[in-house]
Image 1 (cartoon, rainbow, N blue to C red):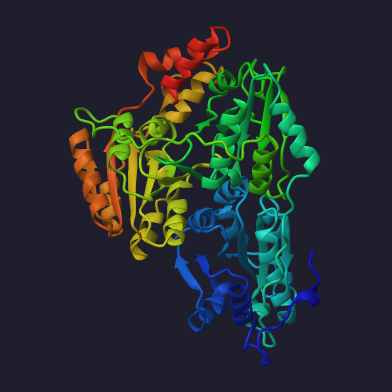
Image 2 (image 1 turned 90 degrees about the horizontal axis):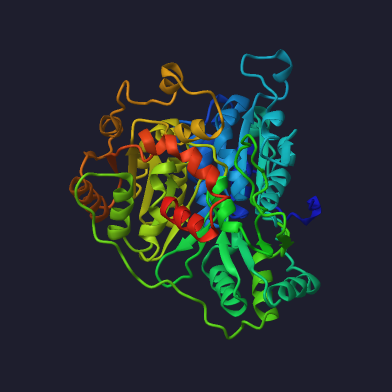
Amino acid sequence: MRKRNALIFQGGMPMKNGAKALIQTLLNSGVDTCFTNPGTSEMHFVAALDSTEMKAVLTLFEGVATGAADGYARIADKPAATLLHLGCGLGNGLANLHNARKARVPMVNIVGDHATYHKKFNAPLESDIETVARNFSTWIRTTPTTEQLAFDAAEAVAVAIGPQAQISTLILPADVSWGDGGEAANALPAFASKKASDAVVNQVAEVLLQKNRKNALLLGRRVLLGDGLLAASKIAERTGAKLFAEVFPARIERGAGLPSIERIAYLAEMASVQLKGFDNLVLVDTNEPVSFFAYPGKKSLLVPDSCAIHNLVEPDQDALGSLQCLVSAVGAGETKPKLQQAVRPEPPSGKLTAAKVCQAIGALMPDNAIISDEAQTSGLQLSAFTVGAPRHDLLTLTGGAIGQGLPVAIGAAIAGQGRPVIALVGDGSAMYTIQSLWTIVREKLDITTIVFNNRSYAILNIELQRVGAEKAGLKAKSQLDLSQPEINFVAIANGMGMPAQKAATADEFNMALEKAFSESGPHLIDAIVPNEFEGLKLKALPSLLGAMSHIPSPVAKAIKKKFAP
């Protein structure tokens, strides 16, 4: 924790109230964007916005605000703030705060609270905000006085930035916000992260240079951008190691001119096939892969027992710098990385399927795009069809809590400052945070939203088959069915002022996508697609997955590549 005497006050005159001091301190610390869903306790903060340069983005639901702050941090590589109302508002944003925690992004939550003298009366909205915050935040502080507010705000930002990037939660009582005597503070000095020790780097290098050993590197959070991928590819070309990326990266750069890297599969059975036969697995800014859920008779840890795990860096260390040290340690400084060639699929035709939607995206996507991917089972072919597309960023569902795709797209678009954004969502997941469409229109963001509309919680149909539950009857199946009543996404989008159209054939989808990409601003395409797994294919899936560990490895890997490339 930093000492308060490290702070230097901004100017010599006290600010009029705590809210103004708070906002100016955030700005001095580099936080210039705030995603808001305010209430009565936050009105002084709202009023103070007029006299500052803080960009304020209104959302209609707290889960949109928290998800947008997550998406902003992934692209801007710095924190945004959220402004939330009491414990209930913070609780409404919790699912996407969970995703942000798993993404390991910096964020500062400003949560309004009742005035300090009012709390004892147990008003209807009184709650234990700190307990809610402990689900995702390790730095939590309720500021008791206006005079202390600048100190706490500067520390909140410094902790969020890290090293290790994380979520800070500053709880702001109303009287502290409106009180006089506040004075803004400058940013606290940044802490420099250290690289992994020479001993650790040399030990990992020795493992990778062993003869007749099958090795792999599993890359995570901070080494999945261009420089990290190039360094990892040099190591792979020099040592023969296989490269993998974590299942759901916060952000990964892809496309022509960059090394192509295979992600670990979501389905545990497929992931086990990928990892089978390796003698050593080197973790670089990620954790050992585990199954998302427990399944009867199946392992939770996915790395084979015979495979040794080696960790190159700790979360508070310099991941990219450590990986570059490993390049030197294995003698790969002059080794050329293996780069993906530019290649695009042809636009699809005929009946529209989820795979053809992915094919069309690969054929038509613009340069320098950002993809916020929450397509679930419908997006399984996206990686294969976009591998040689123009260079782009892919943001994925880090924590598994659906309702992230649209909010993350908002934050990414604002941080991207004009970069085109593609939001891929399922029909069920879209409805979690459908209020996002309103903010997209209000902010005139260049986001093309594609809804994979299969009228089903398709991923749960798969899980129902995998978990060993009793055979599902009509009542059970109805809990996963979204066909009655039909959700009209075109009408919903139009009702919020967004241009939208439905596509039921590949040709219709191609035309809609070309139009969306050629016109700046918001668009929505309601892609009517069949469920990727239904009927006999769905019934056969558990048996196929159960057999993966028993069939020859080349055959299993071929099945995995076809199923989830």
